[in-house]
Length: 320
Image 1 (cartoon, helix red, strand yellow):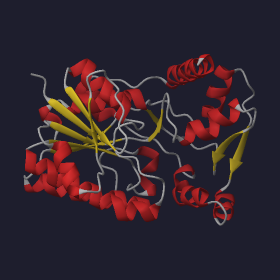
Image 2 (tube, one colour):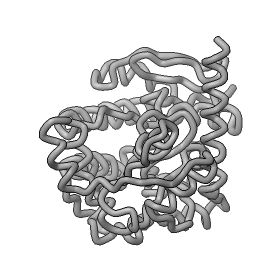
Image 3 (cartoon, one colour):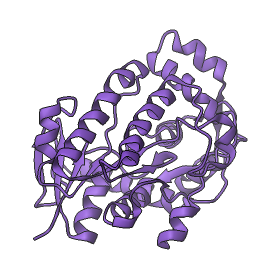
Image 4 (cartoon, one colour):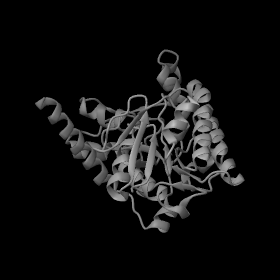
């Protein structure tokens, strides 16, 4: 019988492609857990649950071999500070109680700004933002449980996401959607700085692989990310060329984000993290590539696939 793999936080940037990969490549049963889960595969099991409720998480994890924590909370440091520790505590307790492995899909917010130009799994942890402090806290919670021997777990860490069908990608919102609307692309702080992005289909393939590999547990892994060192202008040009438009870009300086943040709360949240666009931001995934022989999709190919996916989605909507 296929073993059960449960995705806590289904339907997001990673949850959907991960569900496909776990089922199609590894032939595992898939249980999707969230407030309003929807099937990705025809035989998915759906569980409606509030992941902030301990009893609900226990019920969702019961009978699972692996649970993937890939929740995407609204972009609010106040909410993150309140909710993330509870989410992690519930996931840890449920996995320990049911003998389930835990895979935590994480980001780089806890890394020191000095580490941004070459981030590896050994990068210095010294967050300079409230969101970064939260991510450090929950990662420490998980790694402490692993060190004590009470839980098999790993952290799958990525750079900023981009990929087909994502609604909350800064790259797609401020570059692709702006260019598509006939406007200038928007970049934060400095378009001459390098910025890595992790392609979600690559991330999903790697997460499914390490989640299904016993020897991968007990450490942090950087998910496959293209080594091409593209800066902001390069990314804008890459999208513009494939869209057949001019690569016009407006650089939103940090002081502008701060000023707009007094009126628009989301801009205030972005300004807190905008230091990541003031430095070269290079995400090194050579560890996982060497260990498992996997490679990231080239940015030009990824952008082409994103545009093809968006065109197909638009045609489908227009035909309905």
